[in-house]
Image 1 (tube, rainbow, N blue to C red):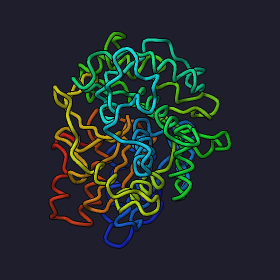
Image 2: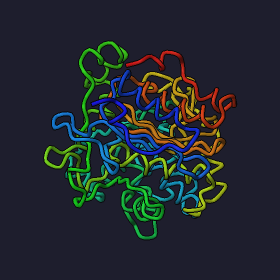
Image 3: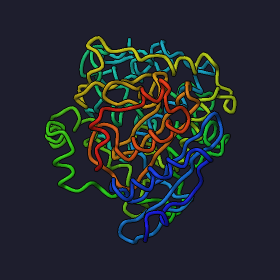
Length: 413
């Protein structure tokens, strides 16, 4: 099948180069199946999908195909707290224990919501055993979380809370929501449903397997040559920070299910989101264009757009071993991972997924894929698509120039 015949969807006039970049992803950058969507000033200007959703069966990616987006889920979870902040339920600079008194144990009493959401709380791993049954029981999980001791004095270092961030923010949201809803339920009720976004943090049993893309892992040679050697060693070292944060107890494998593709009725708000690029871009578009559809407070949107505040020892991440920027639950642009303008906020997922809002440009963007790739910085497929989107709206603007990553990110994979 020719590449062009694999691609379906729509681009508004003037955005044809995005379709070309999407086609090149299949022809030159090893794409298997995926989707890209972009909104510009509230209008959908790109909505493309193509390839296959299942490598074993060869079934095609459809308009409504959804896929696991791993840590890009963190941005969706952060949206729920932004809604809570907008309604006056949550102050980002208040201590977590103000809303969750049991949290004030074992050195956590002074941790602020802002520090927690910036991965500066020292709570990147759990010492007590946590399995699927505990994750499914939010009351039991809350007890474990409250007992956890920070790895160091909170606020001193940054360390990526790969899975724990979602568990902590989920319980925090339960404490401030008058209805005591889980984060996944809140997201559906207050964000996804009002804007018609087909994305879930808690995948219901009603979603058929036929709508879900299965993930293809990167090959061993790609892992060897494209993944940083030190990170590879840390991932297999059971004592390393990133192994404890990402692989162990309960580990990212909890998001998948052999029978149902992905876990159902289980919330992993830092890594278990499943959705379409269209839905994710739509949500970010609302945040990029004033938030009227969700009645967002302008002060909240200004806070999300503001520069990130570093830990005492800066933005160097003790888990990911590089300079990364986080603020209020979102990833922010920085020297290692650049996207959009300086005021942009979003979240990337392992293997290539990315969603973000750029209020300066009025962009809501998302890219999702079934072919995971190795690497910790911007995926070449996503970079090509983002370049094409920004080139279509402002080819010589400062925002476009700032969206350019390091040249190494542009190497075909």
